[in-house]
Length: 449
Image 1 (cartoon, rainbow, N blue to C red):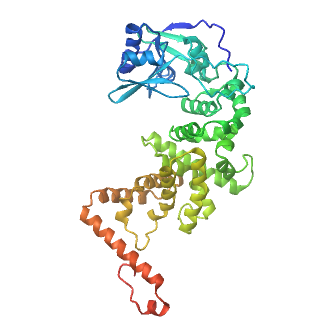
Image 2 (image 1 turned 180 degrees about the horizontal axis):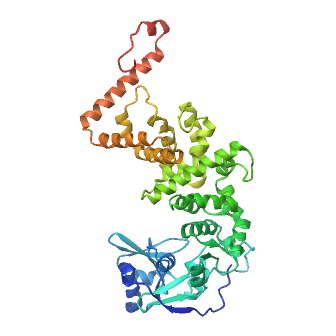
Image 3 (image 1 turned 30 degrees about the horizontal axis):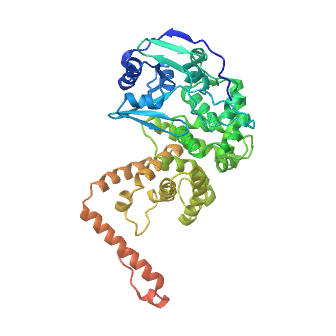
């Protein structure tokens, strides 16, 4: 484990951060902890990093010397959560301020077998120990907004100015302690445009295999964050380069083939996969947040269509093969990653339904399709593939307008469509059960002609 026993003297500088850019609820939490409770309390982590970079923080987290029960005693609107890492959520209207007690790295006992993987992280410590146990130097900065002080125990300010991502402590040890840090390093490097320190990169590559041991809910959470980051293309390329993709998404890595292959078919597969991620990034930058089902579908779309031999542009192919192929890949992925059946099932359906946008299927109601539960996600996926392959935008816009019309349809119109669908279904079932001579003498109905 990381050695936090040595006392580290911090570098303290005057903070040049406008008060207006700070979150008022987080400031309120810090003031109560400092003035009413007499505890140390700071803004910490990503919010401090982003403020110093001139970015708008998504969350404002607080770290304090107060223990969870002491925090809870000061805030009637606080709730203690977590097992592996106990902290307090202080709830305000429309916002939660996550408030954590200073930690230190877990201490090794006599029974330890040399395994560095951290499974418990609830040993309280000082501010300096808390800084040393964090993952990267740029994420270990403290800000005291009431004293206008920046507190740096680990050289994070220098790395922030240099645009370098570096672990705190020995990189190989830190990655072995928590291999998910490999994915976090990729996330920060691509999102911030930082260079990964050479020793940190080497440790990421040598510990990639250890991701197999990480908790799957944490892994899928980081994958979804990468897909929603607006830098998914760069992140997945980096995952592939360090070997992480081969470990956590082996079926995707195998589909992409050898990195140095000269096979033109492999090049085409890789290019189409990257273009879909590039379209996803552009969509995120346009302000769209992809649903989990869309993220899962984007990961598997080309793999599924390739296996089902479906043309990516015309959607020509056997829809049953497409459904079987989608289930073949997505269902095991969902089980391993502990993804909900709702999200995985919807991912399968929106892949299968892509052909409905370009192929009018006899007997299928456009109105009911446009009002179905998965329609919006299916349309989002169609938008992404239209962006990726440069065609189908007119089809997308037509279905977008049709969706708006369908949502405004009266209950009577919807019920009429459902009745028509049931009648068509009965007729089709009747045709399957009637004999050849009966079928020949039965006139075709207007709906099925």
